[in-house]
Length: 436
Ligand code: GTR
Image (cartoon, rainbow, N blue to C red; front, side):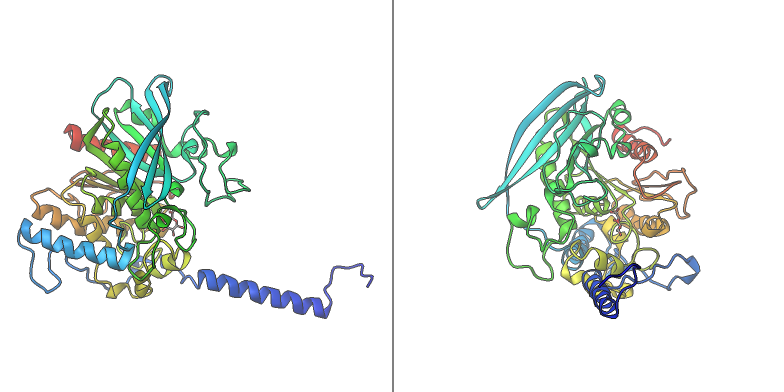
């Protein structure tokens, strides 16, 4: 038929209608309905937080010995109801030095790229590390943190090996074959003010998080999940737990590096990686300090406030981040046998720094702050100062105690201001500087 205008015929209309319905059906199948977020403080439900210092049977926790037992109860809840249980099998690890540059970052740093090969029952996985250590210093503290877009994305130095594993965010990075390319060099450099960090005497160890486990729903068939393949049930570890586990494997290697102080290793993560950093810190006491940057829902922020992202929202958009049991709490925050202040409390008595950003309401800054307040009694029971604030501080007024906190202007991100806060906090604990 000869048509000059672009109207559809009735049969084409029917086809378009059926196609649209199929699209909507497919979308609701994969993502479900994400409930609208609440951003109104006056629309908050009344809630009572579970008491970290009360056993499940109602007995109070009176001393450090009691806390050891109570801690085990709380840890088991987070493992079986939220993140999923990590495998206990021990992997073999081989470290291969791929490159070494003695004068990196204009002579400020010694730079290495190391391939960690993890092997388990005949299968193996490579994790590429990029390491910067302050030149000429010994026994340095380091920050271990994942990056989102490949090691080559964190710096403008153009000779970093390109990440070889899959890239989740392929559209944003203009990637067509799911592999990193030159276009993504330096794309995340603003999140890693390397020179400032190195000048303050700290080293950096980073890896692309997709090397450890992919950030998409692959039925747990890639990354470390493939190493430990087996039947999946409601308590099986999900992707955030896999990233947390990966942090510990990186730590295994970092502890063998002679230039690094083994008692001053910090685990840091932003957002979803912040959730993983908290779980890594809770699961592995060899991390001397934990930094959660804008970790929000199911990270540092209290779930019962139902402000910003909710359990239902996170489970719907990212069903592979948490274990099957976590879905039980969609819309049922008040029934949860734990809340996120208890995740923070699992890190006690080690120093913990939590950051928020003013515009990052999805991550509920106030909920992150209140979580620090509610974790403090556990630090205090253990003879620590805990969190020395009850009222939310203003912008750019860090609170420094055993738990530290700041909220800065701006959006969901990692900035130089955040790094300054981390390192002031680390200096306060590691170098015993006075509060700035
Ligand atoms: C959001 C997610 C958050 C947060 C963030 C991120 O889309 O809802 O929980 O983790 O992603 O990782 O940047």
